[in-house]
Image (cartoon, rainbow, N blue to C red):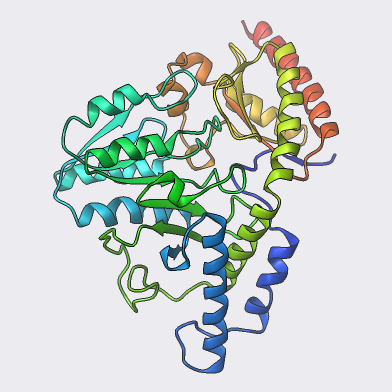
Length: 381
């Protein structure tokens, strides 16, 4: 039985071109990028080239890129680092944020901050009226993701940033799910800080970055040797950074083709889901093209995910980073979805190597498993 991977929002396979770029720094060129000898200088040159590639992918300058070990670290760096330079006040995060944003924001409450959630509508879009209301209270930091990892909903971050700046608040956005799927322009978004991640775009695990407005006073999370201009100490993972740079270059180059291909796959999938009476979440809003989040009434999502896995299909029930929780998706609950229906959620997220034939076979397997599981439920009742 062949295995089909439909979970690209969780992580992606390392692209061949990316691996080729990384290999010299994994097998032959082992210099420390802070060393002064020729090996170190070669490593430093590779890191700086990657910094240029990452910057070019998001419309920023190279000196605005701070490399981290993950998107999670970059998000924590943004929240804690910016807050450390400010007087405690209100911090606003959207109700659909990934835990690596919402949890550090909540942890700031122990330091005198007050954390509040910005509501979203039924299509997973930020409620601008609620944001405006919350901003009437002195606010120092706002964090809203550019693309939701579960529904694929795209937020109007430029509008969020405009409102926040009017109230003198700093703005951060987690763009990990946006890069490589929609155009990302740091300056057009008008934010102070933005998180991106390597393994979401065919790059290696263990590399991320925070893109920073140079005027932001941010304190480091990690102290030590002073790498990354003192903002992120620790010996650079040169191979991973080189891979990140190569992946960014490829992502921008292939963006249009990716969008057209995955949108076609999603249209085919959702046409089939409609015939099976699925509820597709956020389908009336603006979404990235590769993502579909759906459920069937009276069907447990985890059970369906495992059944589909046995048939050779790798899908998820939401965020991989929250898969150890038995609670329904906080994203769906924030959208006003009934808790029982939310428990049935399944996410499919396509990549460039997926095909229409795979989608067709998946829909057949899905229909078969739905019938089988419903019959088992009927017998048990």
